[in-house]
Amino acid sequence: MKIGPIDLGPRPVMLAPMEDVTDGSFRLICKEAGADMVYTEFVSADALIRNIAATTRKLVINPAERPVAIQIYGREPDVMVQAAKIVEQAGPDIIDINFGCPVKKVAGKGAGAGLLRDVPKMLDITRAVVDAVNLPVTVKTRLGWDHDSKIIVELAERLQDCGISALTVHGRTRSQMYTGQADWEMIARVKENPRLHIPVIGNGDISTHRQITDAFDRYGVDGVMVGRATIGAPWIFRTLKGGDPVPVAAQFDLLRRQIHESIERIDPLRGILHIRRHLAVTPLFKGIPDFKATRISILQANTPESLLGLIDHVQRTYYPSSL
Image (cartoon, rainbow, N blue to C red):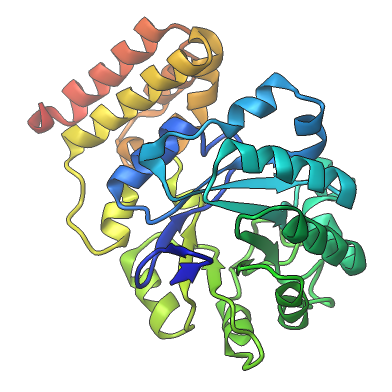
């Protein structure tokens, strides 16, 4: 599959953009585990043009993580154009536009999935960004605003006409948020449209190699994007692509690496707060009997020493053969 000049090879599996998750450290670990392409956290166009430090830091790319896309969101064409030009200077391989974020603080203000209720403006933004930069521009969106407005098949064509190089479809409406099941049949309908010639990337509920295989063989997508299943388990790409599981000892080492790099990137306290989202859902802690008290201690730890000591305790106590 190619996005503009970027050749991702056959059946690429990609890391989805996720706010407060896909920082540089996480992206690089996912890349090392086999992700064919990674995406940054989404970047606010308004914050970017105001040079907000926390936002501009999201533009930092490690050459080892390429190919990488920087994703931007906003609600006004002129602001999105300015932001896209700033992003282009950061040197990503691709610029992605977020028309899919369902959270109220984004969609409720007319950005992200909110633009599914204002398709003309969505198309104006897309066309303006494509025309403003020399990088491939892609779009990530949803099936529609709600069950009664699943417009994605027609919308895909209109976005293609704006000049985008690929389209990612999350198989839910905005109203569904992340509930229910992703509708891969609807994603397949987008791909089956004979008038659509850009790559179609499917997204939603992917967590196993079998599902990856179905996405390509049954639903016909050109690429697959994986999101929530990677949180707390960036090593999952190895098994998603049919490889052997990453040894438990290596999983613990990667978890420690995430903790260290999060602390180094931010500071001890905020770095720990940032990594808690991963610690809360990591499969390393699932299924352990009578683990509640230890889990609470891990999620309440507020110094590197206490947190890493607890991680060591878990490995020694529950996974001694991994030492």
